[in-house]
Length: 405
Image (cartoon, rainbow, N blue to C red):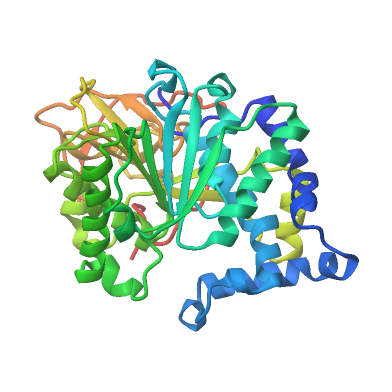
């Protein structure tokens, strides 16, 4: 069993415990601001979700929202990405020439992804340097300052960081002297004006994809990582980007177990989207308490990642990635789960103890029965590998689950 998410190390957990102290150094709060922080977090959450159309100015222009983002949204995003990055099959930067491999982080904001990767890969401490790019300067500078303070508190060296203000289209026109070891694009595809038409596919979304591949063509990173929220918009954007990337000569390394057509992209009338759910057991107490005070209790986190390589790779056959929560199916042993594979959409029997995102070895009988509801091939046999972090979750409405509309 190969999990998509790894538990945090003791060192990384210590970093999350120290995060409020680091944040207070770069964004100190007086007593009044501390009292209003839960309310500000709730207000920013509404603005970023149900009231997004009312967001006429960047939330970085509001002091209350800046604090809410740094003390609440940034830590949760750090946790999501750290759990993911600890398991992803990223190329080893230590194989690069001296001076450090270049991590190009596009849409970096407050350097969330570079900090998350630095937290979970202490063995790469002297091997990476960062170029963080965003259209807004303020979050870049705050992220750079936070990186330095957190490293000081942990007694570690931060990666060297340069920041640049640029959009995707501007990045596509830039030339660089060295090839990025890794290019990352996080929470960029979902930052569009018309979310509904973007999810369905329109000129705005195609332009986003075109700009990403222009940057890739110009800078030639060996590996590209895209991470979006596990929402319908984020997941569908990643699925469509994958389809475009494969036609541009890329290979999907993770979470995809194959380079064939995406079973979710190809069928089901657009009800479902590719996303994975992870537990919140590693969340520090201070963050869960802030979530409770803001009325935003989190029992699970979700995201939609895609790791692409410009080089040909050898893929292990007979592997499926679990997509759904467990559920009973009449006539099948134990609890079943949907999974993605080169064989298409599968329904794994007796897979209740695995976790969202786990990769499982499977054998698909050519005469396999199909599930009447989803038309997925049924894979019989035990898949009940006890996962150390197993916990049952209710996943987003509309995901692969019998209760989905």
